[in-house]
Length: 54
Image (tube, helix red, strand yellow):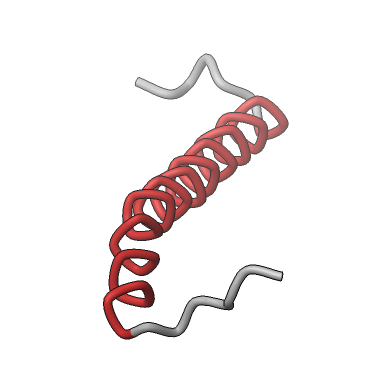
């Protein structure tokens, strides 16, 4: 099945899969963090921790 792949080819394929999965996880955590920011801002305003205008 994989007899047509050489060792360098399999290595590049493996590295491509690892890098792609890593990028997907970083993107996922970035999106989760961006989605939670408005909720955090609303909580801080509700507590009255915002600065007075200067």
